[in-house]
Amino acid sequence: MKKILAITLKDTIVRFTSPIEWVFFLVLPIIFTVVIGASSGPSGDDRVKMIVVDQANNTLSETLITSLEASSSVKIELRKIEDASSALEQKKISSVLIIPENFNQQSLISKNAELELQQLPNNTEALIAQQAVQAVLSRVSSVVDIANASVTRAESLPGFKFESEAARQVFFDSSLEKAQTLLAESPNRITEEKGKTKDSVEFDPRSNASAGQLITWVFIPLIGLSGSFAYERQKGTLRRLLTTPTSKGLFLTGTIIGQVMTAIVQMILLVLFGIFVMKLNWAQAPLALAVMLISSALAAAALGTMLGTFVKTESQANGLSIMIGMVMALMGGCWYPLELFPQTVQQIVKVLPTTWAMRGLLDIVLRGQGLTSILPEAGVLLGFTFIFMIIGIVRFKYE
Image (cartoon, rainbow, N blue to C red; front, side, top):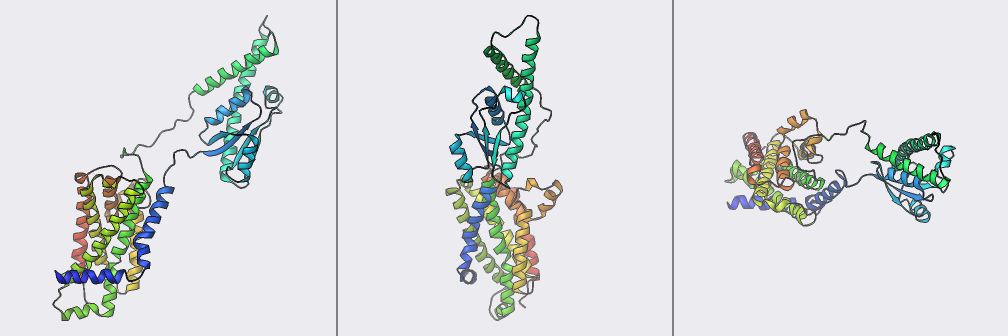
């Protein structure tokens, strides 16, 4: 036991000799977790913001504004012209729509109606706003045409005559409102359906980022065990162990335990960050969480041990460990939800331990499940551990 502790302490001291190790141990994982968690997934309202200045203040401008409010592309905000111009100059907004005073029924009939759309140049959001305004204008024009046709039809009836221009305007406004209601109630030509998935839980990008970055930044250094073995093999340290009463199994046990314990500390710190800073549901099943953290760390360390028996130099091992770790993290759903991948890929990546680690951790933090639910994932990870360790021990050489 003393020998195992001595090997563990030695490896830990060597690993944290350089201050840069703390950057990879804690700083970068936290930064990536926050950035990816904040930028992934849909926001509450992802429509393009646009300011509308209503200088007409009539029924027609109200119809236009109502149609814009129902748009799925833009989210409008009514402002005065001074506030709108200031926001556009400061680039707080990409588009400002000004409805002039002469925007009325007569201007539409004479085809002299104009709207002023001020935009930032070469801006994608401004282009989206422009297309949304054009679509709404087309819709409003149809409604106005129907209202005008109603007025014309009424005037053509025998013995019917509007008592005044005000009465004619009231009839037009009523027809406009009725036409708008009927158009809104008309059946959609395109039916929108949401894709059906097996998971009924709503996706949370923060939970996915927390679990994914935890796995990524723990797997890479544990796979990097291969570099440690290659280094000590090159320096002759392993060969000198032959002169001591230290068996192959004892040496591997001490090395692996040290790295696994360090990884568990790292994972606990990242979990605490998720609980207290990101307000995630990591603490709802502590026993299940402990099982998943330990089994994930063991699988990664065993993979690093096996890889160390195939590489010859430290530089080769370091390059391979980073590449393998990043590819496994990406394909295992640590950076993007696995549901975004094709079904064939989702089946293929089940051969990766990161896939099972990610699935088990998401069962805890996202789906709120307990120990019973994560036992299959933990069992698969321990199976990976057993296979990798057997290969590593059989192939392990001092020289």
